[in-house]
Length: 434
Ligand SMILES: C[S@@+](CC[C@H](N)C(=O)[O-])C[C@H]1O[C@@H](n2cnc3c(N)ncnc32)[C@H](O)[C@@H]1O
Image (cartoon, rainbow, N blue to C red):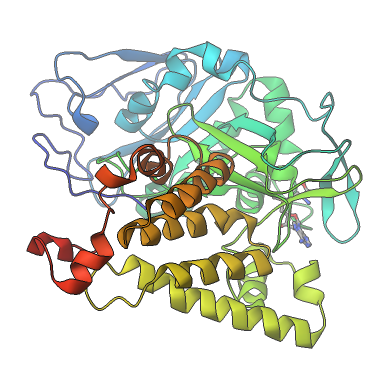
């Protein structure tokens, strides 16, 4: 989730395509080949005197939002990521803003991404009974190893689904796919439509985006965007779901890249899996959600284990949920202690929630530091960093916070914070809660 509480001088209210400087309007008349979208100044604090333009190789007709003056169109750049290409369905100023990201401007940043599945030394694609295609490890992959990195193929602003008609956005989705360079377009069109057959081209593209897209939350620093993005990465989309997956993903906004790392050692012959949902839910909740959104009955090991084991797992999940808020509570009445954080870590381990370990370690680091135990705090901060690098990435605010704690616990914001708050020492602002 993002924080949008920074002071702003020239805020774009959502749905306002005007800029903080008068006279810079968007050129959104569709043109057969090249479309140049102005990049309005002020968006996320950018320099109002610098207005780069981006040349898109394809555009589309635009559809006006029912809720604002924004127009939504397709912007394709076939040169993006060294010729792989990408299509964006969003307003012109959002597309132009994204085109200033390092991933666009510095092609070197994405030169090692987008490995072909066919030539990968790490995995192969094969059929898994009851699940369609999936990826199987070819060799021993160690915990923390990078498995795959994909730049966005198709990126749709969620506003599009709310603010233009279904008929119109389906048309934009089709143009977005059709505009991609041929090999990339073929990879998208081969994706799973989850058992649906005899679909028209338009229906097929709608079904395959629904089956394969990830929800990507906006960048926490992005003041202009409060909707998520709906994004397809065709190679990553081949990984099937497991409630206790062996791999995890995070998205890097700067390079428009989704990274997949191993959560634990993966043996040759094992399927490489991701969790499509928050895995820290009870069995019934997980199964209901997977059925509702993806339409399959989860038959993973955790969902099919004996009732006694399933009940024990659900009880641990309930306890995890109960403990979690004690740590988030920075007020005097929080019952959080370092021992409670140790329990949370143990519950994550018992549940094999590899993707949550970094969070458990980070909370333990803060609780130990909060009561003045710098060495145990540093131990957990180092663990949080190691696990965080593979599950949330080095740019994550919590990972950066843990680096600071590990370097100097005494000058970290959390030093003696719990004790002070509990005892009513120090300034009143200690009462700040999230
Ligand atoms: C993102 S795709 C995964 C790759 C897909 N199996 C393929 O053939 O390309 C999601 C679809 O895969 C299938 N799937 C993924 N995980 C599954 C699981 N654990 N059990 C059954 N089907 C699954 C479902 O059809 C789901 O809609």
